[in-house]
Length: 450
Image (cartoon, rainbow, N blue to C red):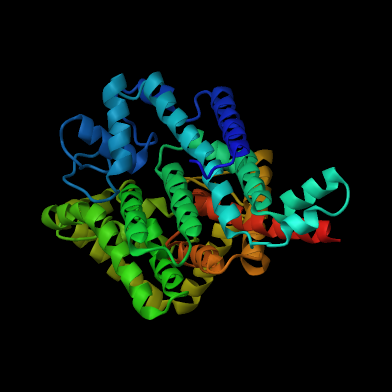
């Protein structure tokens, strides 16, 4: 924490105030009053698989029943977030007002602290300027201080932190969504900030500690595992293959030591060492004759009785393998349509659905967008465009491009071939915001230089 500027804490306070105010304004945003009427038990539209598994834990049925229909053990989600939800349900006695507000408040706090780590991430990636002091000494005092601040890394850090604090979606989703996205965003921003601060020449012991933290992040959600190739390349760059291989081995070993017990549990209980077991199902839901790039709820076992019956008959892992085989066969038989769907999913991931397109709900039903849909689209598309532009044109320290571009390229790949909700980008949103801030900081430096 000694590396965190005092001003960054003010931005964290601002971000937290915005989120708590929004929580108070929206009131029943998480649907807790509706869930409260259901005999103090979880309803499907409060928490979905995460809430269902949490309810099973509270009932003493173990990590099981992802669809609230009485099925057996599951690996549909990573363990930490359902455990948190279950702890709150146990503490408050079910999905009551206190439990829902406590969960939303915890997510608001987590989202606010992303601002702190974004400050440090952008500052660590901003290019060094050894002549800052010399140039700052020229001219009047106030102008020189402005030059010094803008040309230093704290300008990029402050821009990133403020953009996140005031980002409408970064404030809205944490207080309305019962899902692990906010904690993944916090964990990923912390992890990348620490990696950037230690630099590509960090000693193996430091890399091992970072690997342990990465292992904890994988137990919230394994999606950041996609960044592993970029991380290994980052550490291999400055000192050659042999030291880079040593660092990479330390990182992988430490992460496996932390996340490995959950993989062993899944292997023993379900027959797969994967940290999550649902990839094949998501492939099939997004690639079929009725696919439109979004979630096709009527083919999901949570909504389709025939698919759920197959899920029970085959078991979770064989059913996911069966779904994957169906999706792959469909993609081979329809390569042109699969390519169009993948391009549409990429567009939705970065720019969101067009504001005149309807909102597709999890069940497959559609809801017309109102004026708020335009705000959502402008925010989602604007930040996405700035983030991609920053990855291309922002000036970064050595190795910084590997981290930023690697994250922006690798993380969304699985969603390009499955399906996309706008919220799927949220765990990556801190990196998108940092990339945009680094681009804006470069423009500010050029302006001041003139």
